[in-house]
Length: 331
Ligand code: NAD
Ligand code: DAU
Image (cartoon, rainbow, N blue to C red; front, side):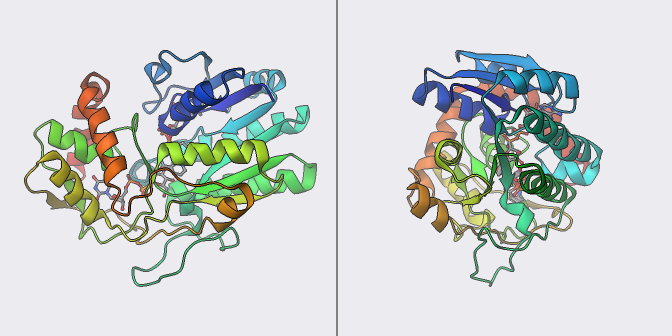
């Protein structure tokens, strides 16, 4: 494998993946296909030796040409934010379902390896007092328009693998955090609120649990699966942070940044309660070990806070509009 097509490579996780590949596989050629929606940015790839093609994964002709040139495809491109999917689900259907279909048809035609990036949210949620964790065999039960379209895309990938022999793997990962994450998301929103002199905002009671993972740990797992994963398999990715609720995360951010109080705002409709991942298969089969392992996420949060502090020019231009949209919904 020496030419990888990365869809959505100008977004948060995709750009961090391109950075990881540039450092760890410097002989690879990387092409990024990204529509540069509000979530994708050319400057996320600054300084990296990757070709950026600005285009839509629903554009069958373009996708066909780029897939034909590549040896493998890593498919990150998606509409990714739950709150946006509650306001307008339509781009989620378009990109997450039709876009994945378009890509599958191209990898099928050209017999190319595909790794599909999915999410823990396809499994639905657990109740707060349920100690269970999601595994590769947990039944799908998505709750939001976003997670329903991600579940749909996973079903398509499995159907194309079984019916047409597409050489695909899937990974279902938990909540990522780290540099280059859009300020609409929980952790960067709170960090930039503090930096901008605004009060951090907690939905509802903040008892919900997300199994947080640093983006570099996620991407190390993706690279391992791409190179060594068994074709047709799904791998759950998670770093055992399912004991940290949103309230604890916001308190930790305030503590690390020397900030005062936070405020409770309107809850998300249909809010998933708890996600928890059992990544035994990935660890035992492929030897994956996360690097950020301290039990209170302190090291990863400190690194992330430092990045936002040092990169105000990156987040400042989109902060006001993001906060205005939240304020309209009482959040
Ligand atoms: P993001 O919103 O930051 O980035 C998505 C990227 O996809 C952007 O660069 C955007 O321009 C691009 N894109 C959107 N529609 C496109 C289209 N039609 N054609 C081409 N490009 C398009 O998202 P992210 O947080 O980096 O998530 C990346 C992937 O990882 C998604 O598939 C998401 O479902 C999955 N995931 C995310 C998390 C998380 O915590 N963020 C966790 C697990 C899985
Ligand atoms: O679980 C994986 C998923 O994680 C990914 O598939 C999604 O792409 C990604 O966006 C993320 O989804 P969440 O909805 O869990 O992430 P978000 O950052 O939006 O919210 C995390 C938690 O924080 C959630 O319980 C809602 C809460 N929250 C969020 C925001 C933006 C707040 O309390 N305050 C906020 O301001």
